[in-house]
Length: 428
Ligand SMILES: *Cc1c(COP(=O)(O)O)cnc(C)c1O
Ligand SMILES: [Zn+2]
Image 1 (cartoon, protein in one colour):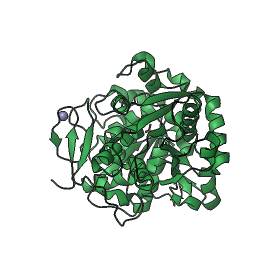
Image 2 (cartoon, protein in one colour):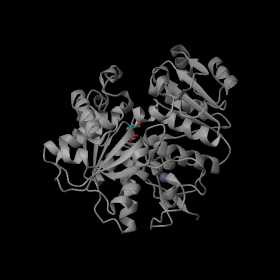
Image 3 (cartoon, rainbow, N blue to C red):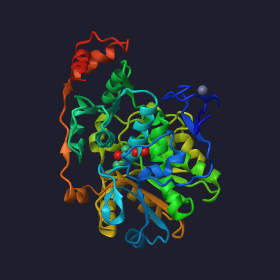
């Protein structure tokens, strides 16, 4: 059966992996690895965790997170076992993720999995950090890539390498959801492949490295795991990695509690979870116009994998987890506290997680002696700019709002007669 198999969480059947994203639509697939004991490989970065990645080989790209015990923030909050998983650029601590977010844990494993299942051009839709991560990895290993991104997010699209010709950027005059719809259309064309988001086991198992690295460094699973979420895929990944670590046996048998945090003005997962719903009700999803009120639009996902089997609602209930809605002033305050206590800048989404930790301390819902893992999902951007000058990617084509409407009216995903699809094909 090879190194791993995929199990459908709806029908429990084993599914053969052809870069397969689903069996039943209402359920995720989950990877089951032959090796129940994690043995670190003598390979660089994330490839140390090869035992629990759904690939056969590896590539020459893929920096790992750094887990370290906090002194500054721990003292500030009165915590005795606070550990930080730093996903960003901070060479002083051995952190070298140059696109400064944990999305770069996903891109190498995902692109490697894609290569191993046929030679197709990879298509990724993103509000910024995912596109940046995939562009960085693709540029490091020389793979073609198509990025679909909302125009307002273009400023987040840069890499530290020279921008190669075989990375094409399509900017859409719309939001993240529109980018996903167009990305799906292009990914369905012969010779292209859509990355698949949360349904892609390589993306989740890549993000799961945060928990693996932490458990190895801490020699135990944490009691509490804090993370800012938009889709919540990182939360699912932390839960799945914990299942494997418990099965391994060397890291304790206590499932960590997930503490997942959203930005209050746009917090659909918070709304559903606090309303005791395991589906997103229409009233849980705020109007699009709320996105501009958030502390960071990175977390404003309108369609998260919440109710799907094995998704966020299951992860929360199986870990006895909780969800926070963080106000903008709390987030601002938390960012400043973290940065002065730990001496490195963090991205705004990471400040949402720090604020959740501050609140948990204030309300006494965690014990000062508890083993805590704080996922700093992005940071070190200011630090990076001391060493690198980022190269911004330009749009090869801008798709207007009218063209998007026309595309969405078309049903057959392979119809190439539509004008804008022809234009897209011309640049690819
Ligand atoms: C994508 C992202 C998140 C949210 O991750 P999900 O688990 O996919 O919701 C948090 N922080 C940063 C910096 C991100 O880029
Ligand atoms: Zn199934």
